Length: 206
Image (cartoon, rainbow, N blue to C red):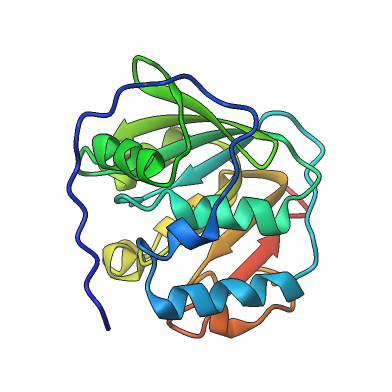
């Protein structure tokens, strides 16, 4: 497996561009070959629509991973165009996220702790929330719960998955690469997850 090294830098906000697109040739510098291969499997997954705007996506333990949720939005949520991201990590990785956006040529506007940008006609506001998710999770509600490589962090918090699912709004979507065994899952390729346990579920009731 190759090593991907990322160095944050101060990126000047250039203003959002409604014509910005995800250029997959540029993404190759930030994703492992295995990840790029699994992305192709998303084309076989049924499209999802949420009747709300903006749609709130919560991503705990995000690190610098801005690209994966963007790919999932493009592939699965074709009919939704307005999103509010709440990214969370114990470390402040906001500058690194902005650096990656700049490297893949997605310009953004910035206002305090939020940035705004477009990809493939989707208008996205991203808010970065630094702190311990196991304390913050009680006070956050969302329409999409997005989790990736978070298994080790939640192992010592057996109550976490229940709380995370409970705080998902009705008709919301759970996307996780492991766990969440007691939810009604869509029939999707398990190989989407490195653990071969990919979960996508729609919460039908509060």
